[in-house]
Length: 319
Image (cartoon, rainbow, N blue to C red; front, side, top):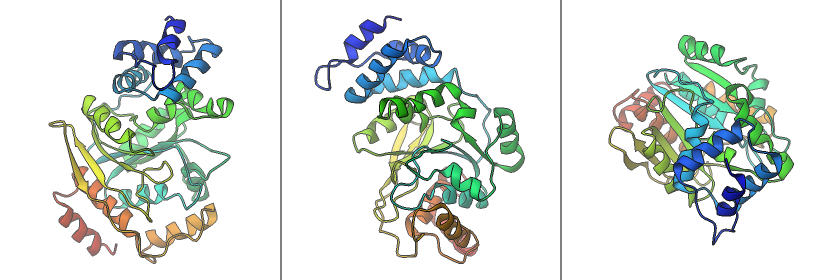
């Protein structure tokens, strides 16, 4: 692996840098995750990629290199994979609520994310306040999925080399490609389940959609909320569905209207948990954008054939 040549290609700035081809990107990221790139070169590569942005072939190649470090569980029906890597900075983090509501609706949910972030409130911290513990290892998580249809894993357990890449943020001061890749991964084989994905910047939307088409994975992709996958209750975006059966992409949910129901009063964990419990126990309604997102998930996870069926069923259940 010639780090100097790679840095020369990708480090010429946003206007003059070149994207790596898929094979080179695969070999590079595999070497990075295997600690085969010295620290100085690694920092240079990550900063160069941050400035340039990942090309479509690079993103696919990085993922191919990362696959060697991930489990490859067989398919499990009605399964949704949810990433949670940003947490809440301005408003309550609703990813745990989305996951728990979907599980109550009969969807198998695998949620993965960071353990903590000193600048935000993470899903892991919210689950801890609810006494929902992360799986201790990959085998326990797989057993939880088979037995209960729900499991939460922190990335340091799911994929330690990727967790190490993520932690470089606190040394470099910036996020890196690992933050993009972490939101795309799954412990299941590529075609299994449905991946929930979000982007923070509009230019990443077609890139992420193309990525899922390239690996033949089903996915729901939208502009998230503060980097999380749930629809922003104040400014809900459209949701795009990538169908792996024909590599088709469609807008399964158009841009909606803001929530008209009470939300958590603030982002603090205790307040968030209290509001979540009220929604789960049907004492407080699900915000409309989140409810519409749940309906879309129920359809693509094959719990229901149409959105109207899922909508009617949710209403019958008191939601």
